[in-house]
Image (cartoon, rainbow, N blue to C red; front, side):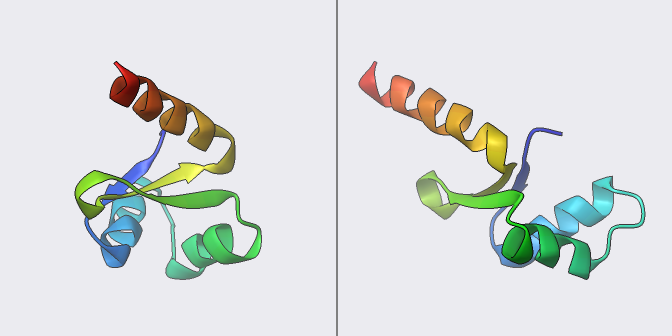
Length: 69
C-alpha cells in the first residue's frame, strides 16, 4: 500500500481498518502522532492522504513536476 486516501480525518482510519487485518484506532494514532511513521498530507480540494514518511517526498515531487509542466 502506497498511501491512504480520505476526505476527512475519520475516513483515513476507515481506509486502514478496511485494508489491515487487526488494525485498531490506537495503531493509527501511534503511527501518526507518537512514532510519526505516517505523515498526513493535505492536497488539492482538501483531500487528505496519509503516506509512510519515506514516500512523501515522491508524492510532493510528482505534484511539483505536474504543476511546472
